[in-house]
Image 1 (cartoon, rainbow, N blue to C red):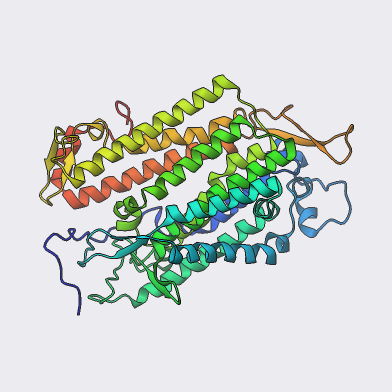
Image 2: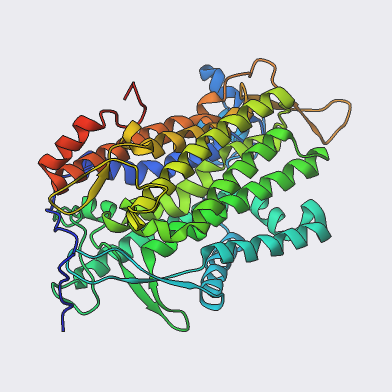
Length: 492
């Protein structure tokens, strides 16, 4: 029997047009993102420098290097292939990395099943009813991190987890890229089993069933694909991938890079501490507030396809950890003044982020709460109340500004990024790290996250605006007249 529609169900959202440049944009993004990830991994490296020195002298890029036993690829790219430590196509993946990656996913699944969990219900589906979610990601992360901390106390920077990650970084990247492609294809094919009025509360995303294969595969046809696994039971693929393998993996990569810095230099710099602590705080805060993801656009609106699969499993852990990887080779020392300034920016952004979201959540939970009862709002024909004062009266997406401010703490510790590695004459078998002629040359790499995140948040804000216009109609226009600015008060 099909689930009955509740009287307070979310108003049906009409299917809408293409996003992200349509099929052409989806194709370019889908097959361009892995190339971008490899570019970051190779061009900023621990072989020759960040960026590879020959990039600063284009005439040398294709000059055959002065060493023997060249592979065809090294011969074609010359010096650049040698400088980036190109392992050949066969070297992009290894059995060790495959087994380690599968073990990582299996461990997360095992802890998901065995650890105590909070059972939550999602928002009302357009077709009626609510899906149930099992949530224990914070406890999962805590279990893993405490275990690794104990291992590090015993083994130091040679703890096998850290050495495994640093030894197989490129291969782990490849494994997760393959999983993202496979997962995107799996959920796309599985989505064709969705039928109207089904008993499993399965439905298609409003923007994911256009009929164009490449676009639907990229954007995601099914809203909340689920799979039943022996012993584990039913798993909501989207929410599970959203916070577990990639987000916790982000912290794990950072810690491995910290161990590498300590093993190489005998100390951990203030810049590295700022990066790993601020990013761990961000991740653990998201895991602690795990139920909040049930009201985000990713869960309520977007289908699950290659876009979210790649973002969750590859882009977040491997791109967001670029600064820590950079600092593992070039140990930047900030000093008290710079460190205090960066921490102040991070804390300021976090305060606005947490205060604004707490205000919104408190208002949604109980508008009569004395903490939020004074806030002004407009009521829409759909029954929703939109805040027009407090944090949300300053900008319609004030939390995005706070999110972006926090991202500065991930990039600023690299300062005028750029270094080169040269063999040491005094200590054979070692290399010297130098910024001579390289200062500032790696800024496009280590500061990429700030630029990317700004574009991401603006694009997400535009998608939010379009969604709200479809949902609220003239009420949204009335709301925009009261709250004029989108993200940055007085500017945008």
